[in-house]
Image (cartoon, rainbow, N blue to C red):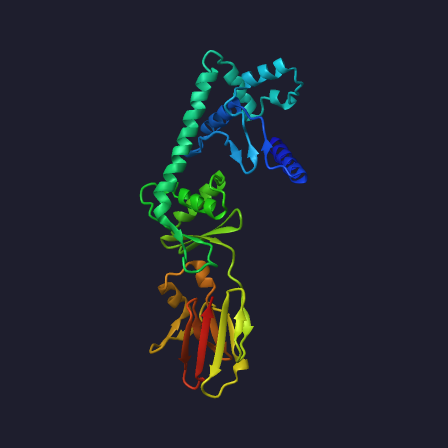
Length: 340
């Protein structure tokens, strides 16, 4: 119930901010709240890299009083003559935070404001060092999946982690924060555990859906963070140039030998499709794409030119112009495939 009430409060604040055009939402979290959060994470058995306090900013929510103790704030409110309300649920020791707060109040001689501040600063410093080290350690392993393709919004992550496998989620979290334009954002503990399971999985292929419409897909020792889905295409081709606006491409077919061009179609490749490469026998499209070491999203975007008997050639992302005679008895075609 407490968690549901918290979500409802923030939802109302966000709605009111949108209604009145407010840029920021300020909350009154204090140094005590921050220290309690750190201790709760420690006592819950959370891993050391999650022993962090309350962030000063989350989206447009700011917490300007995190270095002010609760006692100091109460004194200032009383001296100012302001009226405030104490939530009755704060006295319910069945809630973990309230129970911890009561235990801390029983140690007034030790839990001073100065010691509490040093404790929180040490915990947050640990978190900040971790954030800085993850950027430095994994910067070389996070590269654009296909730098030449502006439509590709995925990041390729080379799984170079040999010793700290439990921290493998950091590279994914860093890439996810970049793609969502939220460099200070963090994934929840549940997502971090699931990411570790994906990265350490021995299955040939493992996939995980992440927030903000991103997917983590691992094949072998390479994992990709992918945004969006490949467009599904099954389109007839005419003698004039046929546009594929979803991909920014154009196809032009000319018949070298007698052929009805209106019988040709372009579609997404499917498992089992085979095409004949120049001077080579038939080969699976999946094998050709695997040899090119494309990201999963780039592979899904590959198309094949087909007639009624099946695929004739693979249409790659590179512009090309060639004549094809894919199988005995098939018409010879001049194919021009142009990508913007």
